[in-house]
Every structure is written in C-alpha cells, then in structure tokens.
Length: 113
Length: 112
Image (cartoon, rainbow over all chains, first blue to last red; front, side, top):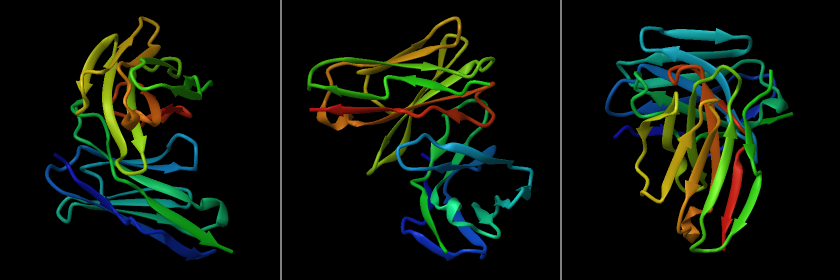
C-alpha cells in the first residue's frame, strides 16, 4: 500500500520567510497529488492539486512542485504570515477513483511574528 | 454556495451501541467519501459513494457501512461500537471523485 511521509515535527518559520513542506511517497506514482490545510477541530480545506504530468502549480502565495522521479512533492508558502499557522496535509490519489485519497499525517506549521 | 454539512457535530455513545452519521454534499457533487481521523493514524479512507453505489472501500471492518441516497446525501453507520472507534469522522464531496475534495466540519464521536 502507499506510504506517505511528511515532517512529523512542527516547523517553525519566521513571519515573512518562505515555508517549505515536504511530502515523500513510496510505491506507485499517484495520478494526482493534493495539499490541504487543517485547523484544529475543523475539516481539511483544499489548497492545490497537481497532476502527474505537471511539474509545478501556483496559487497566490502558494506553490507546489511534483517530482515523480524523486517521489516527492514540495509545498511552499512565500511571505508567510501568522495566519498561515496550521497543519498541512499531503494527499495522493491513484486516479480512476481507485482507493480514495491517501493522506500523510501532516506537518504542523507555526509562523512566528 | 453551501458547503458540506455533517450532522451531528458531536456524539457520545456507549460501547456496543450503533451510530449513524449524516453528510450533505455540495449541490451538484455526486461523489461522497468518508474518512476517520485519529491522532495516531491520521486521516484514513473508509469508503466512497458515487451515484448511490459504493465505488471504493478502505481497510475497515464490516461494522463500518454506508449508503448514498438519490439526492447524493450520504449516511455512515457503525455498529457494535468499540472504544477505538472514537475519532473525528469526516465526509468529503467532489464532483467526480477525481478532483479536489471539499470536507465538512466532521462529527466528533466519543465511545465510552
């Protein structure tokens, strides 16, 4: 089965800097890779989706890269703000509606003012 | 546009009882997936329904079941509750199951 690794420890970043989060996976290459944000006591919120034939995707201050050779995705938040503090989840989809989304356990990001 | 609505938000049940959770997806979304979230295991896929048919199922015992109605609303049922079933149960809807998922706030189930 698919295994996903995200930094289990909290990531502390100073406000204004770029936060970079890592998602590594084993086994099959997913058709899609998605990033979600989750705040305490709330459901995950979709941020970005990147397909296996795409290298990079951007949305405002967010950027995602996808390297199928390294089996890795990087998630960047530029000009980080304290309001960006949350847990960020990486999720993989095999495609074809096969197994649902397989989630990593998330990285807790803390942006310090 | 209304989001995904899950009811109830909180639930306390006793071991051995059964429970039914409800999910109303975003209008127009035909795929509804259910996930269990615990601190130790993170988010785990339970099952997905599309047009009233269970299309995929995760690795959970048969005590966990679900269904989807013609209006895409979905219910999840857990029978013979165990203490380990205490978790946040999340429902997510999407247009087809192959695009971004929109999650509800979840139902916090506590089994005592």
